[in-house]
Length: 232
Figure (cartoon, rainbow, N blue to C red):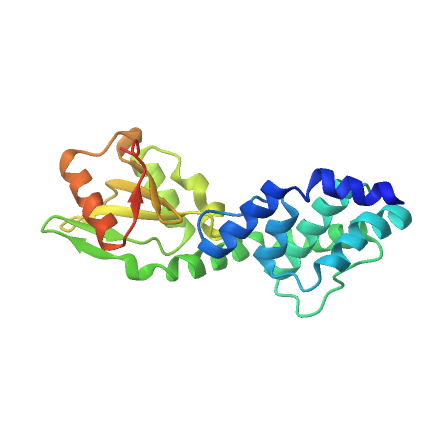
C-alpha cells in the first residue's frame, strides 16, 4: 500500500500548498483554497490530521472503494455541513462516508438559507466597527444580512449579490460607500480581502469619481489597508 501515501504527497502534500495555508493562517489574509488539505485542517482546526490522512488514504480506499481525492472532497463537504448544522456529536470518520454525506446533505439543504444568513450576519458583525463618516459628504456602511447585497447589486446593476457565500465564509468583506444625506441609497461598493481593497465599483461597474476615490483613500488610511494599484 506504499503507493497510497505517494498519491497524497503528489496531490496535496506539496510545499506550495502547505506554505499557502500557513501564510493565510498566520496573517488572516484572504480565503483558504477549498481543495487544499492543509487549508481544510487550519480552517476548521481539525483535531487529528494524521488520523484523517490514514482514513482518507486507506480506510476509504479499502472498505469503500474511494480514491483519495474523491474521499477528501466527500469528507470535506460532510465535515463542513456538520459544523454548519451545529451537530454537537457526529462521526468524524464514518464507516460509510458517502451514505453519511448524503444524509447530512439532505438535512443541510432543508435549512441552507437559514445557515447562510446566520453565518453572513456573524461575519459582518465582526467588522461592524468599520462603519464611519468620511469627511462631510460620505459614510461607510456595513451590510447586516444577505438581502443587503442583493439590494445593492440590483440598484447598482452589478454582481455583488453573488458574493454572499464568499462573505459568509469569511473570504472577502463587502462595504458600501454612501452619501450621508442618502445613507440608504446605494452609491459605491467596496470589496476588501485581507488588508487590501481590491474593488471599488458604482452603477453598472463604473469607476469611482474623484471625490469617491478620495473618500475611499481616507477610509483605507484609517483602517490601515493597502489599495491595489488598479482598483479604481
